[in-house]
Image (cartoon, rainbow, N blue to C red; front, side, top):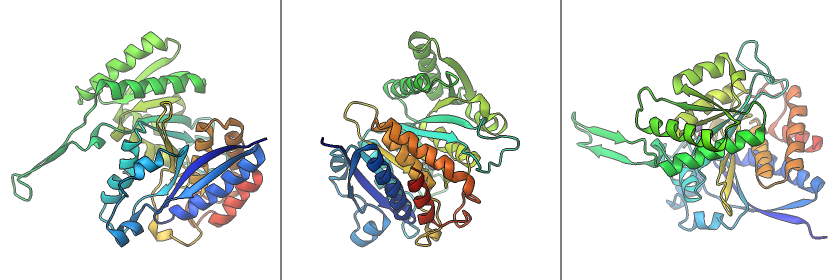
Length: 355
Ligand code: IPM
Ligand code: MN
């Protein structure tokens, strides 16, 4: 019998990216062996070192090349010798945009034995998912300067949304909430009291779509500032949160710290459309100061591998990885780099073995 094979583009990237990706692949291959499928990987050297050596941020055909794969598995982008913005916009955001990965899915889930800074909260209370719009809003890049460098300088950067972008994101969030079937509650995180155009559109679409097509899903609304407060005080209120790109970026870092930090927080850049190519990455950065020390936590990368398998329809395999992670987290002293009580490769080995 021929085995199902998935073609995966691997982008280890900068800093500690390659180390965590190596552990992620170790776990993914072990899981594939066990569940009877194959991952056929091809590695690309996109990142800061390549840019510094060649002057090219991303080869011109890179996005097209990625479309030949079933999924993309990314480590981290960001290099201390490259000015902030060049690699982020030129690689990460470019791929998200070109591949129309309009959803950034970021689970906030506290695993057993992981320390949270939230007082009196545990895995029961911290378990929700943020659906961040991933191709629009302030990230669209519309804006500019005039009179740059003078006292009268003007800088504009616009929060741009069209109805199509908002609606497809909101529909995805309702569908996701329905499939998750946990508390059947979708919360819109906005700022309708100040951003009276952009989030007015979001709010109208949210209620219209919800009322018409998802009558069984409860709809909550929170301003973004209040969302931050409740994520700390009452995280158990949340099931799924949907929000725009900028707010989603900000609140998912807050969410990540409540689940143990960047060492464990995973995400998926998803194009849910037929034939769409999605990209999975740990949400933390390239952590350059820990590069090559074998101390960085690979669990976020391993979790994003789990999300990738789930996206590819390998549900049992994905669940096996999550169970394995949950069997390993209680053994680690901390989720932080250098404080786990184990090395990067040891943690990868432990999860692979547990699978
Ligand atoms: C993230 C990151 C990126 C973003 C940066 C690196 C461009 O912070 O994935 O959350 O803002 O989306
Ligand atoms: Mn971010």
